Image 1 (spheres, rainbow, N blue to C red):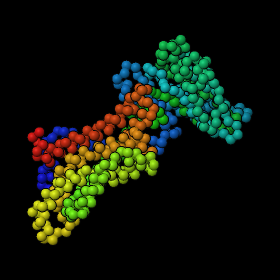
Image 2: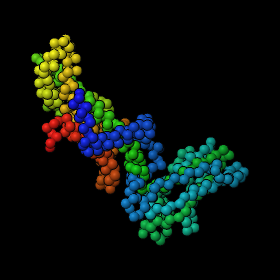
Image 3: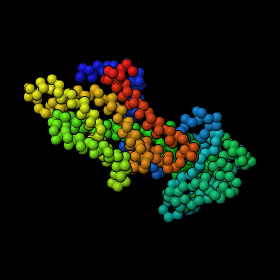
Image 4: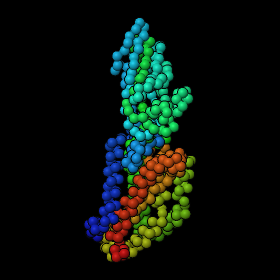
Length: 443
């Protein structure tokens, strides 16, 4: 134990160990932030997507890409207003309301798309609306008329009639001069979308939301389902660390106890453990996990249990056995037996602690191995279907041909987190190996 404590004090003498500790602390802090900032249920709802992400652009790059560009990519612009916020003209049996949605467009590129969301309230006869687009140079463009339902979406960018009339995609034509369509030059300034609504019932109302979807969003961007990738990057951290840590602890401790039990009792117990280990060593772990995920369950906890079960009788048992055999013959073990120490006390208090300092470096470097295993299963399509993880992000990016379509951020961000995790634990593990193994200190 004194040697172990001395080794811990020596960690500060290795810059790589301190760097590894800082990386691990950063990952732990990120995990705590994710758990408290985005509770588990909220994270699952966010990752399922749906209407939650309707305000986000599709396949948007991270906002920081504008730091390295000459042309400023647009961010998402959202303008909301209700018919209750403006004055209405009342007539006999009907009323009229003009709802102006004003915004300034100062970006160098066109948005990715434009949508208008309408929520109307009526009993029998819904309202009728006409849309007008007013540009900074004084032009007024009629966008068409609609009879909105209780919940209605006007996809301005996908309006083929409007596109034919403007001779260009609407989200580009509406933000440029008529003779500059081919040049793709944005007309900057103040725009206004006017909603001219006619109500046929006294209690009718209309809530409007105009969204000009940008080409950048947040620190990590969005995917093909408008989901914020930052949610998966944040929650993928505690999931990855928990999976790696639990798998490493479960396999290492169980394997060590089984190896020590076999060494202490010997005879048929040791022989049985060695034969089971030899059979288990030839079983391929990844194909077994693929089979479990395809035929039984893809739950991360089921996968964790299978990993631990397959990792118990691994090659580590033979290594631990070779280390424990000399310890069994040590004088202090004989002294413990002389004063009446039981089998469990000798195994847990006298044999196992003697090899812990040597096993700690291997245990630390084993954690990222299981982290990469979980990510590999997710990339193969066998990840947990519920949880947002780094591997799931890579799987979705692969399915949508992210690299081919130029969405490099979609692949780089989760890959960077995986490499950072492996680097942090590897630097700490290699430094601990030098500390606890005197023969490596001179290398």
